[in-house]
Structure formats: structure tokens, C-alpha cells
Length: 242
Image (cartoon, rainbow, N blue to C red; front, top):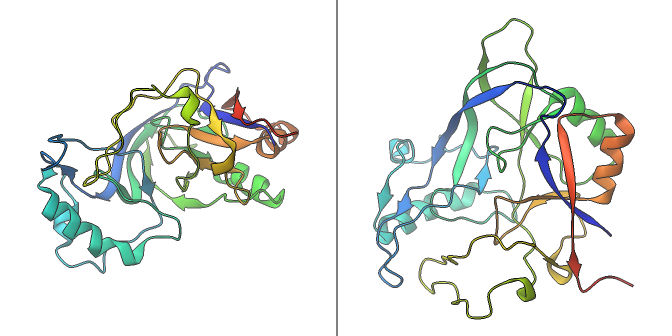
């Protein structure tokens, strides 16, 4: 199986812009007691998760850093509501994307490269093709024009890792307390074949979650359906399948 990095394609002249945030989120981490780092990820997003049953809901509405004890307490409040396979980190977002948009969009759009969205009709066509792992969630996006598309946010589980051979040999292990890795995405990025899912055609990497990855099945379906606004670049995989 071949794999590809997915990005929005604006070469067709699409001028659409989207500005907003998700309704709720975990705080960032303030001065981890072990690695001494203040950090927030923000690339792990679960738009299907409704936090309204959580007590002290207002605690999840304002981005800010918190000590690790408070961060871990808030993690336990949301953990029972997560979809299977979800992973939490400081800055993880929940609930619908809320914001404004204007301009022309292709079938695929992304306010940030790691917050992918698709027009409803395009997503339904891909789902009818039998592709796996395509979950569209409603957004709360207000358009500044009458003729506006219905954009659904894709909820992508964090799965798969970069192969160790493409990472710095002198890298430090993840922080044993907060889990921070502290690496920038390698170039070239090589996927570890043993960690890639067999049940998903679209996902984000667990260790470099800003990277959206798809299978060649997904690419072929998009090309067959003539979906626009999306581009693919091949990612090497190691070890290569025979």
C-alpha cells in the first residue's frame, strides 16, 4: 500500500478563507515539573465530542496554560467522552469549529493544514466508495455570501509514526510526565510501515499530528470522482512491502 500527505490545493484559483476556533479545548501545559517546558499541541482535534455533560464547562472555553495537575484533572473529565483511539495532549480541541468564511472553496478546505474539512456532497461521494475512517462533523461557520457550501470537519484519529531512521540519532526520549517529544517534522518524512493502520484510509500521524495521511485508495477515489481543492504528495514507507 502506498501513502500520501494530504494538503489543500489552491492552484485552481479558490480564494476561500476560514477563520475560527473549536468550541472547547484542554489547556496548554505550564512548566512541566520534569522537562520544565510550557507547551500546547493543538493538532489533535475531536469535533464529534460534546463536552456539555462536563461540570465546570467554562474551564474548557478559554485557552491558557495550566499546571500539570490541573491539566490531568481536566483530561479525566473528558476521557469518557472520547471516540475509541483518541489521544489527548495539551491544547486538544473538542466540539464544532466555530467561525466565519468567505470566498470560493473546492471539495476540500483547511483553515489550518491539520484541520481538514470537506464539502458535504464530496464527503458523501467518498463514503459511498467504501473508504474507511471518513467521519464528517458539523461546523458552525457563518458565510459572508448567499451561495455557500456546507463544510464538514473530518475527525481524524492519530495513528502511525515516523520511522526512527528519519529522526535525529541523538534525540531525547519523550518526557515521562507530560509526553512531550520536542521534535520538528523531519524532511524527508518516512513512515514506519509496522505502525500504519489497516482499517483507515485517512488519518493523522500520532507523533507529527499536523500531518494528514491517506492511502492510495483515497487518492484514486478522489481522482475518479474529480474532486478538487486537494493535492497529494507521496510519502516513503520503511520497510517497503514486497
